[in-house]
Image (cartoon, rainbow, N blue to C red; front, top):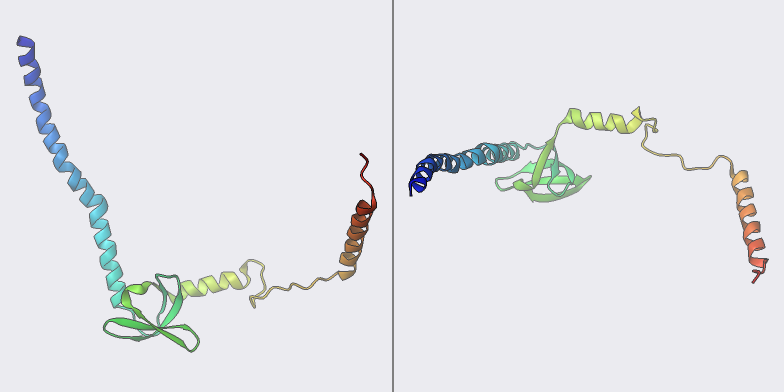
Length: 151
C-alpha cells in the first residue's frame, strides 16, 4: 500500500507536462503550417490583383500568355497572336518578369552551342556513306535468309 502512494505522487508531475505538450502542438502547427500558408495566399491574391495589361503571365494550366484587358472579375489573355481568351483572375499563377524571359531566351538562342535562330540543321553531309552501309546490311540480311538452318 505504501508503494502505491509513492507512485501516485511521482505521476502527478507528468500531468502538467502532458498539458504543456497538448498546448504546444497547436502552436507549432500554427507557426510551421498555417502562418506560412496564409502568407503565400495573401501574396498570391496581391499578385493577381496587380495584374496589368501588357504583362506576361503563366496560367495555372501552364499556358504562357500576355494580358490584354483586365476586368472586375477576370482577365483577357492573348495566348497566340490574334487569339484572345477570357480567364478568371485566379487562373493567373505567376507574372513573368521581362528580365527573366530575356535570360531564358538568351540561353536557348546561342549559349549552349545551338543555332541562334532556334532551328537545327537535320541535313546529312555524307549521303554516299549511308547508302553503302544500307547496301551492306541488305546483303547480310539476304545471305542469312538464304542459309538453311542446320538441324
